[in-house]
Length: 471
Ligand code: UDP
Image: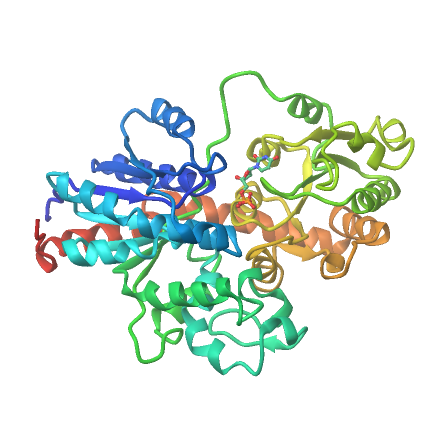
């Protein structure tokens, strides 16, 4: 049997803790197989992005991983003019190429660079240095199939997706997607952000491979389409290795959050959990509709609520909820301000349904916990994820009103009742228990994700002969 030499892999995430966390989980897989990992993080001046503090915290928690903080590139004249924070991120990362190049050249050996989406221009550096480049794709493989195909589809579409409403779009490997459900950045094809993303998608197949945070069983159709090359006609599609679900481990030390203690006292599968990612907020009017819907449903609930964006004052939160709501539901509801330990909440046996914005991490956390989802997408690629979850994976139902101005209390009530207490809800639960088992099996030794990672490592081994490092 061939002996695999220890490799040194540099992981290069985009700005923001949300991009850093999946890289840390990936680093653990490399370490587990005896490889050395360096995570290189650009430390931008922007306080909202990854800060030195976040890196220091992660470094302390993961002493086997080497973290390297790359200095922020000097500010550019264009910065003020970007119409989207994504454009700014891509620009910062593009200008950080000089620092990245210096780091890679200074290291005694680099066997691969793993980047994520917004670091697409790092491909210039890896091409120069003859280092194999891979992407870590931390969203649905279904989205990846769409992205690979968009450069073919987009220019020929009759108009911008924003003007095509409910027209179904057909992409290989995924169910038909209504134009209005496409990623928000791609809705207006005349916009700078859409043009930039199209450039990104066109470059992505230059990578040697993609590591995807998903698992074969969950997205077999999209995976097949990618493997058969139908997403990028006339051009080869890089291999996609599904190595997930990689989800942050539930916290096991420290004080338990009061909401977990509250859950301890609730009957099995009796609670609806509502949580909308790290950024999701609702207007005061929408909060009122959700509250009325929950109240009318009669079911228990745990609701993570943030202040409506139009109000900074924290006291407005109570005022935004219908009068007497908190008192009337005190015996069966628990409202948490801003943040709850979602992964642990979902793992708690008392939770019976998850109202989610369909961020990919949330979707995976729902699946590994076996909890049916009520999909209420808000921004980015979440509407596409809703389509995958509802139409393809069949592990959730849609809160249809998301595409209107407001989701009405009646729909909140109806969807909660449907999932918690109906034949359709039972069907969903059965499907989820299968999905949960398949997710666990994928990660086991010999499971599809374990094997995919091994296959990727074999490719890395092969790279040693394919690439000659020019340093
Ligand atoms: N999360 C959490 N508590 C909250 C809100 C979010 O623990 O109150 C976590 C959630 O478990 C997930 C991540 O934050 O791991 C959100 O990632 P996702 O991809 O779902 O959505 P995003 O925040 O990127 O929109």
